[in-house]
Amino acid sequence: MAFGLSMYPIVYLARFNPDTKKWNEQWIEKDTVPYNKLMEMNEQDRSKILENRNDLGLPGVSYTSQYGYGCFEGMKAFPTKDGGIGIFRPDRNAARFANSMKGLKTEPFPEDMFVKASVEFIKRNNELGYLPEYNPEWEKDNYASAAAIYIRPFMNTEGAIGVGCSQTPYVIICATTVSAYFKGGNTKAVTTKRIRATPNGTGYIKCASNYVISALAKKEAEDQGFMECVYLDSEDHKYLQEGSSCNIFFVMKDGTVCTPELGDTILPGITRMSTLTLAKQAGYKTEERKISIDEVMTDAVECFVTGTAAGITPIESITHNGKEAVFNNRKPGKIATSLQATLKGTQYGKVADKNNWVYRAL
Ligand SMILES: *Cc1c(COP(=O)(O)O)cnc(C)c1O
Figure (cartoon, rainbow, N blue to C red):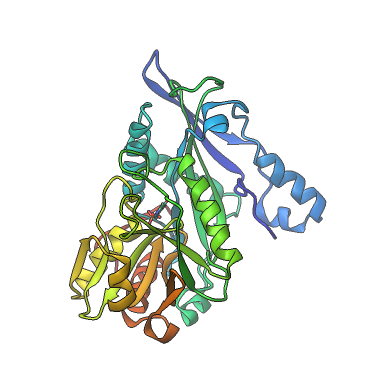
């Protein structure tokens, strides 16, 4: 079945009150039919419930709906081998979310409230049987087919029609169940002429308006038979930036694990940060620096993209100006594979969490 936006029945909502300077919290429990009951229903009744859950009662005409003025987070919770549920680094998502709201010149949502509400969200939805359970079968393909909970906190604004900044933002936390992000098939990437982010723009925050370009560039890449598109910088159109909505890494001939350095055009991915840490801990040399497309075409031996939804996904080739650079004979590289095994193993509780990244919710 297709999962709707608020597949999970209980949704968190907070709203800022500028008079009291407080966030008023509430839990929306519109349709709390337990998971097994939902699955027993016929398709029509089930769709009605899922559609109804998607209606959160937010203003239809707002800075968000009219101008893409809003921001969001993508965070995952994982069923763990010991039977619990762990959220991966919610403190980092909380910090980035607050930074996105600051970047939008609105009241930042407190980081401690973000983490607390995320944990409570898991507990409440668990009571209705919505969380996936750990399955040892997942270990066989190294969690490629494993289920997780995709948590989507986001900010929307009050009703408004003129261009402006939000005074009384809403913060919502909803979630869906997810499995693999990229459909099977090729893992070819192509450079795009489109510009995702410009200096002094909003590329460094997870701001809603940034993703129109991503949707267009990704569709153009897919229409040409590629899985993914890759952005170059706006000024020289020479240096690697990101994938369509994930960060990008290369392993160079000398074994160095490289990723473009952060700046105001690159989204500071939590998977990016975690991958750098795991690579260092595994003894690889890492670099955050400018990486030109020319260097990639001649010197890269592995390429992979990283993100909460994508995890660590190997890329078989990049095509630039009609020339294709193939990495590792189109097979997942050794370093990407080993980093992915450590990351997923940590998230699903099979590998010791030596950095204390997993936050127990259950
Ligand atoms: C969310 C996102 C990423 C990945 O960030 P994670 O925290 O690893 O999920 C990378 N690039 C863009 C543009 C993004 O929106």
